[in-house]
Image (tube, rainbow, N blue to C red; front, side):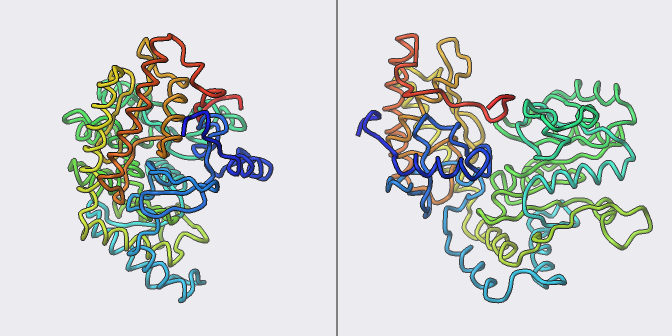
Amino acid sequence: MTTEEFRLPRSREANERLHALIPGGAHTYAKGDDQYPEDLAPVISHGRGAHVWDVDGNRYVEYGSGLRSVSLGHAHPRVLEAVRRELDRGGNFVRPSLLEAEAAERFLATVPTAEMVKFAKNGSDATTAAVRLARAATGRPRVALCADHPFFSVDDWFIGTTPMSAGIPAATTDLTVRFPYGDLAATEELLTRYEGEVACLILEPATHTEPPPGYLAGLRALADRHGCVLVFDEMITGFRWSEAGAQGLYGVVPDLSTFGKALGNGFAVSALAGRRELMERGGLRHSGERVFLLSTTHGAETHSLAAAMAVQTAYAEEGVTARLHALGERLAAGVREAAAAMGVGDHVVVRGRASNLVFATLDDARRPSQEYRTLFLRHLLTGGVLAPSFVVSAALTDADIDHTVDVVAQACAVYRKALDAGDPTPWLGGRPVKPVFRRRA
């Protein structure tokens, strides 16, 4: 089937229904149909393993499943068994269940650099709680976040720094400052400029590039010297880098860290973890001023905590992190080889740790291009590959990877034609995809 013949009539109708009822047509901006070529945004019916089916009946090899949360694959048997076991026992009570202690013990055994943990439902709750706790502990107002990392929270302290800052007072945004990843000198200059004002440094410990040698240890030393709290956002690096996250892999201990995504394999669970001295400020066994740390109605739903424990068991017993890296290395090598063979090796670029691969689509001047991204995504979709990124799940097979590489090769052949023509427009099929963070719809 050619790209001209590939149609998604039921998905198109479903997208119209979604937009009529839900602002943006999805509950996460990154899942919006503006992120896909025009009229080629499939609406999902169901998934199993590394595959999903849309409402039109098309099957895709899926990457970046659940915005990187489904790292074991959809409907993983071990996770489903744990969830079903709790569903028949009730899910939410007026007092804590014993499962909350068991889940906390399991998490702290998996992430031994933390001393206490509190669970919630989404990453934003956890990162914002970390910021609030850091401000309370230090008595300082400012938050310093890493400027090179794309997302930390839906809350004002972060969203106010993006182009989608409507509705957020400038006074709030002014309290958030930025530092560049990998540049200790620039970070020290920032802390000196705002001496005694910065409550915390918050960053993803690693993303699409490895931390420079000594960088994380250097940040640890800077935070100690300037009296601020070091927060690692491990939403992505948690489990994908190692079972104990990037802090476990690189051996640098933050004061606080946040986990989510892979923790529940698609079930809603996140975690704020860290040093007892800090975490207990949100508890009942201290004599200081109380901090409203995390208090969520559904934060300790039994089936989600059971899912988290099952995920940790799977990672430990099935060698999931090693498998993710092996699959990612195979995929990255295949994509790079295919792109080079078609003469676009400098334009279709795979980046990141093997367990967390993304791709860049560059124009003839090697600048990031939404037009060329549209062309590339269009040919992936029509070839049965749903890939806003190349983030792998453990359910992928070698055959899935081989199919993906074959489809990438076909896409790269068209990419070369567009580069030779000096204009990708004839191959877009409509408007280009758009960045998530933009001021106008």
